[in-house]
Image (cartoon, rainbow, N blue to C red; front, top):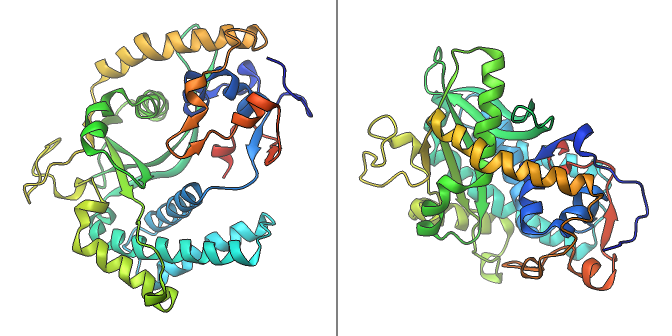
Length: 349
């Protein structure tokens, strides 16, 4: 398929390599991948879910760097830092959009304050990296570099070479049974395990990945209403609701595990989203998933994106609505989109 190409391609396989996001998008739909990663087409507007996730990631990164549980005032300070960052990007908002974002900030504040209370033991760990970008060679013989950014890597003791990785996932709907069942096959997790294992080996062979925590956080569904009166009251209502039913909002029990790699914690709750890591499983991922997929992406790249050449009609609609590239694919309608200058925007923010 031929599409409007206002600017030269921003991505080249041999120069830029791949990210797990690019690979996942290619698996979903090669044509959407071409539009988003080769030509850089990007939605002008950020969805509430994506914006909320950016806030949470920003605050978690800066809070964990402080090495002590943040007080309420610190959370407000981190949120102010995020706002300042957004304003520097010339994010011009209408009065209506500004009001919506202030509600999102209040929702994030209530969630974060409850999160740091519930997971205060996280600050007893030795955090080795936070939101750190990595670039490593892919499987031998491919010549393709792997790019990524891991949310966090920590050890449970100060002088300990046993490393645990953590990825924060903010969701509004959580199907616990499906998430738990599919976790070992999650491409993002396996991609990170493969990439970070290579990175750690290049730093010090003593490092060993012991486990991966999939830190699922539920985005509060409580709406701001007239009964709240003001945003502070709304924030407090969210905070109280989370503390009253923390297991509804937080699925991980990493601080309460009864033993190394245990699935049952001291309170009797299961640590649903912890994965003990074995080198053999990472090797299997390389051979049966990563290498074959990269081989197909190379073929796609070398064909100048003419193979396989079709879009996936099942990927035009997601659980959140139409996919961002749907109108561009079906009607060559690029309104609401712009062309970014870098291939991996998710690593630049």
